[in-house]
Amino acid sequence: MAAIELRNIVKVFSDKRRGRDLLTLDNINLDIEANDFVCLLGPSGCGKSTLLNIIAGFEQATSGRTLVGGKQVERPGSDRGVVFQQPTLMPWLTAIDNIAFHLKLKGVGKAERYDRAMEFIDLVGLRGFEHHHPSEMSGGMNQRVGIARALLMNPSVILMDEPFAALDAQTKLEMQEELVAIWQKRRCTIVFVTHSVDEALVLGNKIVVMTKRPGRIREAVNFDLPRPRDITSPEFNDAKRHILALIREESTRLAQAS
Amino acid sequence: MTSVIDAAPAKPAFRLTRALQGLERVVVPALLIAGWEVFARSGVLPPALLPAPSAVLHALGDWVFGFDETTQTYSGHWLRDALASALRVFGGFALASLLGILAGVAIGWSRLFEKTLEPTLQMLRPIPPVSWIPLAIIWFGIADKPAIFLVFLGAFFPVLMNSIHGVKTVDHNLVRAGAMMGASQRQMLTDIVLPAALPSIFAGLRIAVGSAWMLTVTAEMVAVKSGLGYVLWDSYYFLRYDIVLAAMISIGLLGYLSDLGLKAIMAHTLRWQQSTTVQGRAG
Image (cartoon, rainbow over all chains, first blue to last red):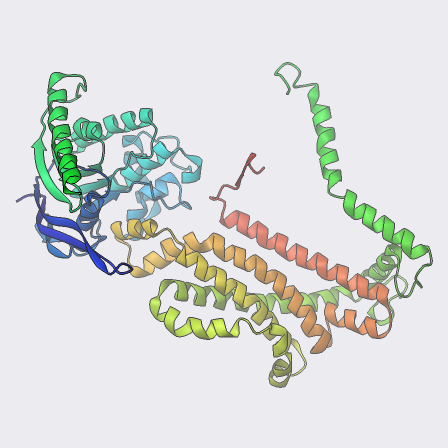
């Protein structure tokens, strides 16, 4: 049984003001195995974030079935940790309180909360900043808190929606390396949405290339280049060429269609 | 620009600029008061119509400490009068804050409350609180109650409006994050929506405390026989404009102090919010 099973997912947004419907996701079928690092790659507006939101339970598919761990997804839940594009931390809580928020909601006492959160503070390299508020930390540090917060729930899958898009190039590289290290250490299933071919190739061992309007899966590419990945190696470039060709072919098709 | 080497000798000069910066706040009021004193003493207007600041200060001093009975029956009674007004402000404001926040959060959070409760409240809102005075007197008589009722009316709507706004503008991704971490509906409200709306709620409370003082004084002029507003209106009948001005100053001062108190509570509660300006963090 796959960790995540998507069966014939269709999502239609009704545009009430213009009185027409917009087909955003068209018959998506995808199996994601446990401990996979899957990158959903596609241009903006291809519905990749919508697909992630459907898995997270934030949005409902118009039709089709979404199963996580064999169970139908109906609402958000702590079995699916989400890392948002913006850190989306509670600004009135310190880093450690944000990370342990899930435990607080469950009624776990403060001492145990802090004890368990410290492990994740260390994991994302924020020791010394645990009592800082989000407004006192940089974007990269806040995103680390967001990742630690998702990991602490020990979810079966982690869903990430372009979490590094707002970071500068250098911080982005560091965070990508750390994320891979965390994934290797903790062995979790990650679904990572991105529009960057390079990012997808650095991170994923399965790259799902999506097409634009309506969102369909063009091809799911398995990519098992050993880590740490050399982004100048021939294998890396071969994969990149293949994926770029898929995308280019798609834009030619769109250009001819219009 | 000071380099590291001459930083130490520059310290006294720095202290002097600090002192001067403190002075710049008082320049305008000092000039105004001095000009008023000179004009009042020049004899253009009879002293009874425009008392000099020194006379007002004298009246205020006697009202507070009762040293020479300049203020006749009020001599030494300031504390009692101020306390009477302050208690009305506090009573009405506390009631308005409690109900305003409750109703505001309910309307902002739930469609049901928005549809059922909000239209009525929004229809009542444009009615000036002062126009309730006749009904307030009929219902509550001449005492503390009509004043508290008026204060409540004046303070309720700013709290209500800002609470609704605060809840409605909560970042909806924070709510999603809460749902992701398994928050129940009640936890969503108490642990996410309410803290997120606090800055806006406090803005409402600060407007409300100002309205509260305005309405206490108004009510005391008409419907109550004690308090700073009553002294003000009573002195007007006896042509004691020095006491009228002393009462105005007292009201201004107490209003200012209430706002300072509220600001201190706000700064403590919202200490996670860095007040950043163009020049950086406010010190």
